[in-house]
Image (cartoon, rainbow, N blue to C red; front, side, top):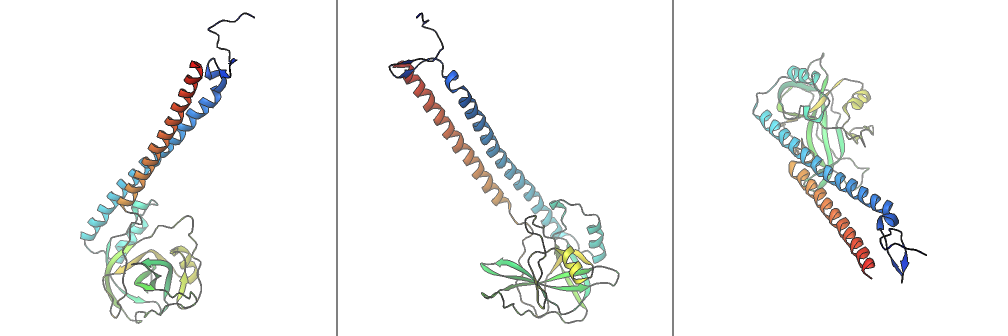
Length: 273
């Protein structure tokens, strides 16, 4: 049988495969390259996305700081801002200063479940206020109260008396978690609910409620702590996540390069035998 010494046909000689590895492993090599590029690109993009989020949060933090220095707004002005509000997270009204005269609607206490403050699990307590008959009601944050190990036992919170009170403070809005946004209220006094879904709370109580919360500077006869977390994840968190994604990308690329080099050396060793 005639045979050219330069043929690319794969033969087996003394147990060693000769010829071009592309004909034997062509599709496997292509798949290897495509998977490497796709996974590496995805990891890098996730890291860049986290850096972009960190930059956005830094801008948002600066906006909050600027609002702390601005004059106090009236409730009508806040409602005007609310009417013009857009839907993205960076158009939230958190941080604006508010001054108003209001009266508690009732002594009904509202408890937002699954809150954590300084390592303690508990609730954020609220009371509903009326500012003017023609305006929507306003949620007033009374503060954080620790919960009991027995979830059947709800904490006792002293409500504001049913008389007019002068209040100053800052407002905030919480983003609704798309994975868990239902109010899931348990009727009673206190009324416990799982998510601060003001639209559903308004429907439940059958009264219009403005889509924001007032955290007062001080309350008479109230000493409950008031956590301030307008930004769920800070700049450092996003930067840390970005570093993790970039590290994973580097480790993955190093592993794939090592496998590629090992494969090439194995083929070269086979040709030299």
